[in-house]
Length: 170
Image 1 (cartoon, rainbow, N blue to C red):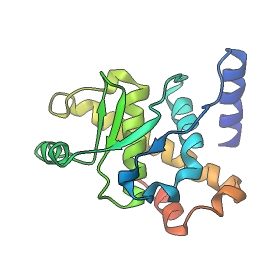
Image 2 (image 1 turned 30 degrees about the horizontal axis):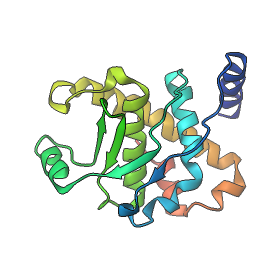
Image 3 (image 1 turned 90 degrees about the vertical axis):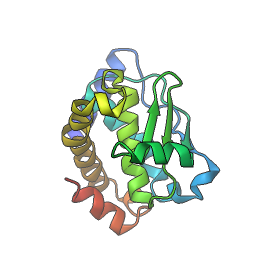
Image 4 (image 1 turned 180 degrees about the vertical axis):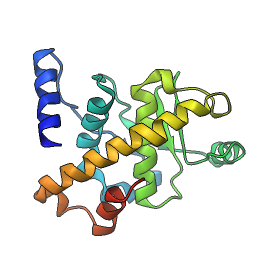
């Protein structure tokens, strides 16, 4: 993992692009649940860039909460956890979930943002969600778990059950 990330950072440096400059903030409606994984946000976005082999210059800066109507509408098509609005470049997440699932949906919706070709209505793009959930999410989680095993100072800030969830993600 460390070599992959070092190679990715070297590629970025050689191509006049940089690391993620500022992590997103989460709206107050999350009630501080994001504090559990906040130390991972920059690294998560960097790893997403590495996994998709693309630099993203414009990550959404505020993660918003889904409205009750958006959750209800999403549940009707097997969703309701998160939402990426491509036209607005906005990520919205169901704030009633636990911190680990909020984080997973942050990653999922960030992948939609980073790869616009994987964005669209869920009912017409099932293959897009399969690519994210069965391939890209697994890669991001594997790299995050490996990163935490190398970075003791950050690992100490993250609850053990959260780390275990990353390690066991399938």
